[in-house]
Amino acid sequence: MAAELRFYDTRTRAVRVFVPREAGRVGIYACGPTVYSRIHIGNARPFVVFSLLKRLLEHNGYAVRLVINVTDVNDKIYAAARGGSSIELAAAMTAAYFVDTDRLGLGRPDHEPLASESIEAIVEEIEALLAKGIAYVSGGDVYFRVRRDGDYGALSRRDLQSMQGEDPGGEELKEDPLDFALWKAQKPGEDSAWDVPWGRGRPGWHIECSAMAEGLLGVGFDIHGGGLDLLFPHHENEAAQTRCARGAELARHWMHNGMLASTDGEKMSKSVGNISLLHEVLDSHGRDAVILYFASAHYRQPIAYGPEQLDQASAGVQRIRDAARRLTAGDSPPALRPLRDRFFDALADDFNTPTALAAMWEWIREANRSDGPPGDRDLREMLGVLALENLFELAGAPEHVVALANERRRARSGGDFARADELRTAIEAAGWSVRDAPGGFELAPLA
Image (cartoon, rainbow, N blue to C red; front, side, top):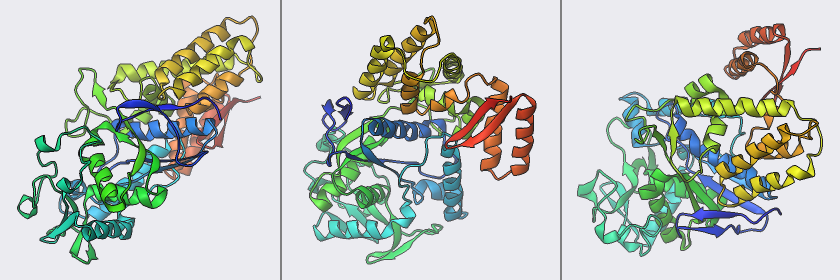
């Protein structure tokens, strides 16, 4: 194993030494999108953060299982369908989510469960809560008795006595305004529903994740992640459900990424209308700039979003390409080794990507000052953890050629092979060959 890893744990509000449940193996569950529309750049942050965290853990010798779910049964989907088929909308937006996140070139999570395909496990967990008196049926709905959980509020550090109900709707059916829905009876216009012992309906949002996480990783898995906006009530409710149903904590460690904010500090969201869709940002700046942009801020902190930040990331990508072009294959000079070590020490200390990048940029500056071209091994290793190792294959390629290659990859992903062939011809006319590779493509000058 490499250096000892330490991560901030939301539950304890402290940076703790990371000790997995099973030596050498790590299970991570991160909450994925609710698929009522195309995902935006803010939705991509947890996907990138926890995909890169998996790479760090693998670099340190762990076998990692990453689970990122898809919520395809939800009130937001009904609302977005506007009386049409929520099932068809969810299926279309799920497919779009896969296409958009494929373009990030990070690979797929090991498991991507759908809520609609997890009903059996959801019903079993609700039945366990009913049997223990933690849940009750009312009007075809099933509600969780919040006050029966003595640790409720421990994750989000909220005082139960000062709370108000955070699960709107169904107040006339609840014993207590704090109670939240585990199951909702089918209402007119809702086309996704299942028959269960207490009536026809569909699951509440929170129980979906508890059931999917437990089913794939077991109770007490290593890391539960997601955006900070999910801490309450979603993650608090997940933790309460599992604790009461199984008599044990859902996860050993909770990690939350910060939100995106506009340059004036306002939270970015679809409802406000101040955020860009992921596929639009990928079209304009490319996946490498998006990855470097997210890595430029500590995962727990808010990150400013705007054209200036993306342009800075694009300039950084070009700087790395230029540096890679000046290197030779092989071992890096021993004098640069402390900077490589500083890079990985920063990642081991609560996944501090900005400090790690500072060490990498210093490595590049020192390499540029070398009398002869230094070996590339250190930089390849650093970029590999950040999923930017492909920049070596793109080193030296003009920006317009890279843009053509990116467009060709999108055409192939969309099944437009005629357009892909046209773009290959244009790339070759510019003096470069293009070869498909895992996670992207490789460019090389024609002989």
